[in-house]
Length: 298
Image (cartoon, rainbow, N blue to C red; front, side):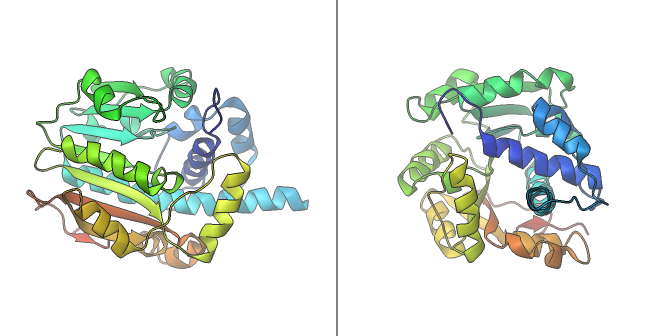
């Protein structure tokens, strides 16, 4: 992202959730916070979006197609991560690269949880200008501004009151693909040091598929280039080096297949996107069964 500006990809991600909420394609998904967190111009585009109408003009059709595909990705990704957070039931949640995430304002399961929103100061400033429109679901939301090129994540979390002696659920969503291997390992080292027994890490990453290179071209044009790819086994090995055991790892099409009959087919262009759920090695979860990284209802 450019210095002095909020993340443009964070807006696209939030737009995907807002479209998913507007179209109500999956019963288990709902995010009424997404529209309110969008900047004015994006909110206006959302309000003009009609899922029943295909616009005229090449540029308008391309943007319409992008929004539809982005919403399919975001619905599956959001449901899977929400389920992993609920199953962990940690007293603390840290969202790394929080962007326009609305969980602390929409998940009632977080009412007794301390939520730490970690993000670049520019993005966080942009979000806080609009978040007053929403009613918090969490009892305690703490904004932790961190510029990873200058600041210490460890020190910032300690200063914000994160308790390393209590279990934490870490949400690392939509960030790893923009980092180098070295930067990923530095952050994992901090997560490992601050993860008490019973902690959980939910991390999203990109696998090396042809669509990943298409996505890389698009976001690179926005000034936010992709820098890392992992196969599932590689991500599992990396998390293992930092004291975590993967309990689920799957691609978006497989997750989507659990949400609707045509989910896999509708999300066939999102196979590059994967979600890994990992628990501290010393305290594996005994809660809801995890199938392919998604807790399944009995």
